[in-house]
Length: 443
Ligand code: NDP
Image (cartoon, rainbow, N blue to C red):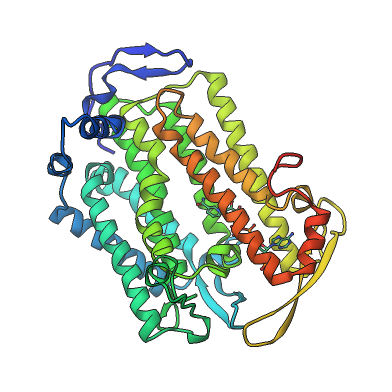
């Protein structure tokens, strides 16, 4: 990794016990990311017009377009052309061909689970380039951040529009399509449930995981490289953000088969919400902490850093164990131990669109007996840890926890509404047994 050495930079101790670099806002993105309110104030006070801001925005470039095309093509190739081999040598990892959940129309899709392999190969290549090959600078993502944003938007809108047209004219499973009569709602929330090209190219699995989540850790690494280039060192806050978010990302790919049973895959249709969200929202907004730290190289005091690490790890533990408990319970049809005991169960049934009656079970033990979505609490604790790693100097890095709190609360209500109509009285029995959604005694 080629790091430009720079003279030592004076440090200023701020009130919240973190050390900030005074020259932090020297570069293009320091100004851009931390003077976000400036342009808004200028417009409100009449000192600038929207066209002035537009004129200052970096345009799409040929280099960014080439990079982005190469990136997406590489991920498509890894997804479609390389059947999983990780499950052959990694004990406990479930990959290769796996079945998804029963769709509302009663279809069970098969998936090629090879995300961990794609993540490993991509990162292997990244590190090989940084330490041996030097084909490109590890700061490449940061250096093309806004031009790449245009490319991500083009893909996000293209894929959402294609999914819409496909839903109308050549759906993969017509019985699983949902037409609401509202064009914009159809575009936003999607028509097709599991759009596919050919037998294996599944839009949901590909777009959520590959351009979105594989990119997440690469973007963070690029931000760390940029911080080192600008400030000659990588701060403990940047290390924490990289490590905690990498744990979350690796967890996602290690458990990609579990992801087939989550709301994204099991209940949401594929439209702009998922298509654009995966291409643009996720890589650009989930990585704000790293971006902030490039130009605000926060160095945390040891107790602060340890506190953030502990919060992140405990949050991750709750998130993982809660999700694992439900997954294990469903996979074994309740024939398992949760916290060392036979789980308490609520037997339930529902009818799919084809009129078939199905039976299912709701878990009332472990974290699922503490609150109905305690897995979200773990996720929120982890999200808060990423933000706290950035100190208290600016609201920008806290965007993530605010967004996640809204997303997961809304998701919780949305999911409960769906479960209530799916399971009817059986769901009422569950809510009576576990009365709180997120935090016992509070909500
Ligand atoms: P859940 O994993 O909580 O899945 C909800 C579904 O599980 C319900 O629809 C129901 O489906 C089933 N279920 C509900 N209660 C029970 C129970 N007691 N026993 C057995 N099954 C039950 O939700 P998500 O898919 O939203 O989230 C999965 C994880 O992903 C979460 O930890 C969340 O924090 C994380 N996430 C992260 C996001 C991010 O952007 N970082 C975004 C979204 C989620 P069924 O119809 O099968 O009964």
